[in-house]
Every structure is written in C-alpha cells, then in structure tokens.
Image 1 (tube, rainbow, N blue to C red):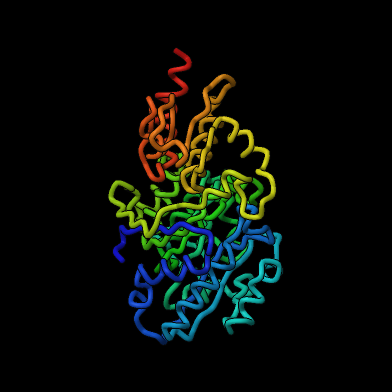
Image 2: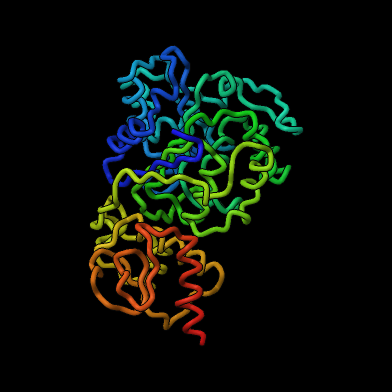
Length: 377
C-alpha cells in the first residue's frame, strides 16, 4: 500500500469488512516482523455509543485483532486516553473493550495512568504518553465525524488520545489547532483504519449520526483528513490544522493526488429507506430536517450520507429554504427523467451530478449552482 492510497470498503458486516480491507491493503506485509509491539488506538472519548456517531465500533477492533493473530503477531495492545472528565477504564468497560481484551488476550493500556515524556515537536514542546512513543507500530482507528471546535475530527485529532490529561487542557489554552498539527510530527501513524460507518454531523459526542456504512484504510494522516473534508463538504482550508501538519511535513493535503481503491460498491439500501439507522430507530431530528429536502429511492448509505452532509453545510450557510424541489437520489431513478438528482443513478435527469458515491464537497458546489441559485433567479 502506497502513502497516497486510500482503500474503501462498503457494507454492514463490519468485522468481516475490516479483515478483507486489511488483507487487500497488505497490512501483515507492511508490519513485517512478527515480534513487533503493535498498538490499536480507537476513538473512545467517553462512554458514548458507536451507533450514535461518537466512538469507534468494536467490530473493527475485533477484525484487526483476528487478522493480526491469524498472521502470527503476538504482541498486541489497545491503548487510549478518554477525554478530561471521563475515566478511560469506564469507557473500555461501557463500550465492550474489556470483553474484547478478555476474549482475545489483548491487554488494555489506560494512557491516563501512563507517564509523560517531553518531546520537541518541530519547535513546540509537547508531552506525550511514554507507551505511545515506545510502540513499534501504531494503528490509528479514528471516527469520521464533525467537531464543534475543529469542524472535523479524524486521524490527526485522534492522536490527542496519546497525551496526558494535563496536556489536553494545555492544548485548549494554546488554541487547539496548532498543537494538534505539531503533535503529528512525533506520534506514530503507521496505518490508519477509519470508521466511516455513522459519524455525527458536527459534534464529537454524537447524537446526529449519518450512516455511510464504510471503512477506509490509509497511511497518510494528512491526506486522510483532507479526504474527510471532501466527504463532509468542508473546504480543507477551513480546517487549519490539516494545512499546518502538511507544512510541517507530516503528509499531503492535496486530495487530487489520492489514489482511491474501492473494494466493492455500496448496496445497503434498506437502511436509508426505513430509518437511515442500523437499529431501526427513527432518524435524529436534525437529520430528518435535512432529509426533507431529498427524495431517495433505493439509495445506498454512502451516497445518501454524502447528500445529507452536503445539505448540512448548505444549511449552516443559511442557504436552505422552503420551496426547493427535492433532490432525487438512488438506484430507483436509473433510466428515469427528472429535474435534479445526485449520483450516477440520476444521469438521465436534466441536472445530475455523477459519482458512485459523489463527494459531499462536490455536491455542495453542484447544488449551489444548479438548485439554490436557479431558484433565486
């Protein structure tokens, strides 16, 4: 797997998807030495449930462990430090990680109890947990979701769980964005497994999940997070720590250089048509409001989720209003004529944006030019 590669898989059997994704990415060959100490770093900011769009799905962790153990890797651990005010041990227990540890014989490392090491991070002194620095290979397992302060959170922001609580507090006094970028120069991001199943629209604690039902693999945390911006409909320049990390040499933020490898197509239409959620509970109110501007017909989660994220960005800009015609989306529109649609399945419409799925950033531009501006005129 090359540094500009992003492997993407769709589906709803998250553990099996993870195993296939790691196989296709050649993770075992990437790690090499079976005696290396490998740390898995999920996003467990607190006890918020994965299905609410806040934390890493445990099925992904199970998939990684089973894959690595099958390939003969013996020195595995799961490390995390929940946010200030929450005990990591409580997050481990509430989200099923204590059970995972017992089932697979993989120790849990509570970094809130670890000692810190002072590091020069490209001219900025930061304190990092010792065990995070000592691991031979780190698998970063962030969630794609919005964030109330940084707009997005994924690989780079998930590194914040590798520092002590005292340093987390100091990050906020330093403006948060710059230290996130500098931290990326010393912590490992050897492999990134991205939970893009149902991250929240714009809040790290969850509550408004948008189902995409996909998982990614990447190696460049900067490129990964820049691609997240595309998927959430946010210009990368609005997330300043991504550009900062690029300037510090952590990676590349130019998504035109990303090599996207789709291992399959999204086909899980039942979730969108019924509720949009895996557990068949009603859509969150904010997502329901955005969904009111759409007309889905057999739409896949990845495509529909991209549209919801794009509509959220337009709504934040005050551009959504009553009277706009619904945006059509889904396989049920193949070969049909219509006014405006998103995705390859609506290619026969008067106005249609290609893509399977299209990125939210492209949907935002398309709808501004062909849906909102047209109605103003």
